Length: 179
Image 1 (cartoon, rainbow, N blue to C red):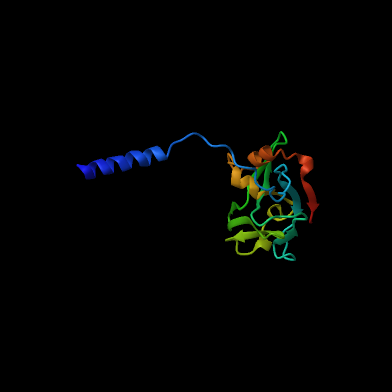
Image 2: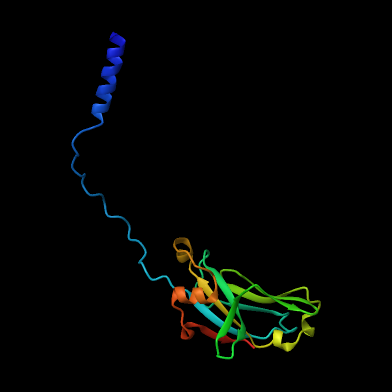
């Protein structure tokens, strides 16, 4: 019985020692190091007009012309069509065109310093393609900041969704004619 009373008393004392009045706040700590200034999250945008030729090996390599951070993601779109009312139809790259002599793929890759637009696919010889697939191709590159990708959810990565999310207007595109 004494053992049971001792255990019960220890439990009661243990629980009561965890309670008490709220104490006062301690003194304030030292000032921290200054942080980076906050800012608006925005995307940088480029529009390119290019010709894919045997001379450039059907590849265009271009620098961004602005800082791209390691976690930033360039999204590339190709002007696929223009409707009778003037509406532009943009498709994400890579994009396939199904032709009689194979599949033509418009593709891209990137580093922190530059990006490449190039032709790929099963077409045996790109130089035999109709010029409509090679000349005056219009691409838009939108570099999406890493901060945005970490904190936000995109409805989709469609061109319309990206330009709406970042409020990109026609005049915001850095235009480059590389023909």
